[in-house]
Image 1 (cartoon, one colour):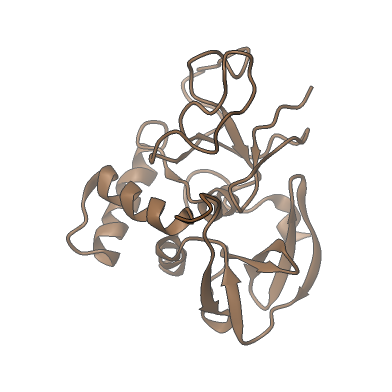
Image 2 (cartoon, rainbow, N blue to C red):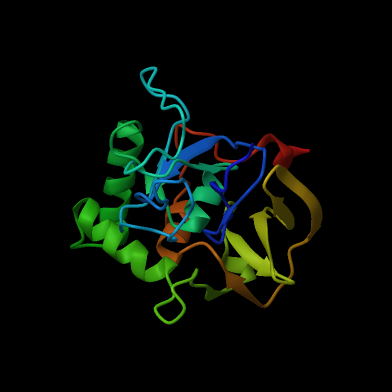
Length: 207
């Protein structure tokens, strides 16, 4: 039976049979019975490889262990506010930290990165996902925006509608102001041309 551990670009946890292409966690979010009790438990929100050194945990949602999360692709994980894992994606993490230092002089290490990202991804009033305002024309490929209350991926001159199983509808990228879902610091990472070792976009984006 599908678990409520599939993550939307808005960081919400939903039930869906599609596992996705990227794995991650944000601490232990479930109780001993496997019921989700919180949206996050720590500031360290990471995005991981689906497989690493043959490690496999079964069953999922074990008492006291981190909650296993799954993302459609890395663009979705970034939109939700997750960054590369320092363990299973070491080379990606090192490149990410070097890029972050160039974008944020004076900030070094995982703690500084996670503190900045937490402020950008969590609304302090509602504790839900924080959105921002940006110009559509300035957004790089891989950023997410809200349109009609739904998350859409920016890809060239097109917006692609996100679903847990892949991208479906398409519409032209408009002009004007966008409601930005991806944290601004991660938009800058995307603008610098970020591509990691995990799948950046689900194959449906190329359909």
